[in-house]
Image 1 (cartoon, rainbow, N blue to C red):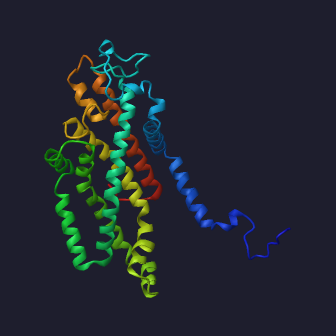
Image 2 (image 1 turned 90 degrees about the vertical axis):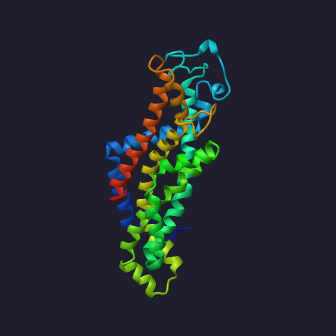
Image 3 (image 1 turned 30 degrees about the horizontal axis):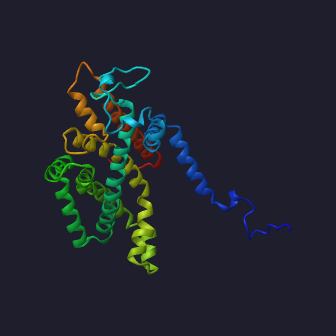
Length: 303
């Protein structure tokens, strides 16, 4: 049965979607795809995530991840059989690097998953309500910003037992501050815009204004900031493990592998250099992707 198009219903998907929406999405994708560094960053991040997700299937020797010893194969240099060589107990370094990405990405997901919602909430409240709410939240944020995250993480993990859970808690304690400052500055600008004033005149609740009017306009900045933060979280997590205050052996962690391999430098360089290069590649990928997203969304002052 045919349905006539009398103007009351769109005849195609293109007509159903506003032209401005299609145009903006296309322009953003076009700007991103024409940025070589952004594309390279996206490819690197996809490779890192794929290694973490499919580690049991792509790692050459998955049985050598944890408690494995083969002294006959210890300290073997990179070869076709062991692309990254072997470590001091005969484990394949490439296998442990691939599994090490799991620990690093888990750290990123937990730290940012805890700190971003908390920081965004405080930034929205401080920027929109102003007054004593702004004073209390922003002064606490300034005090927290005065403490370097790595120093606080070292102090917390030194008091608590060093493990992955405590490392994630230690890094999350101060990470919300950067997102609070970012969202606070954006919200202060947005709350004077006409669409916010119109919502207030129409009697919209504070909850509606915060989460339906202001928050959607902060999503692009949050996305860029989160992508850039991922590399820094990986670096701090690896630093804690390098100092013996993060993930403990025999769990495969990139920072721990660098620390263990440093005892055999420079003769057996691959045991420390290969995990270090893995950290570098992951951080580089997230930073290039973050810069590409920033250019795509035209977001400024995110770092």
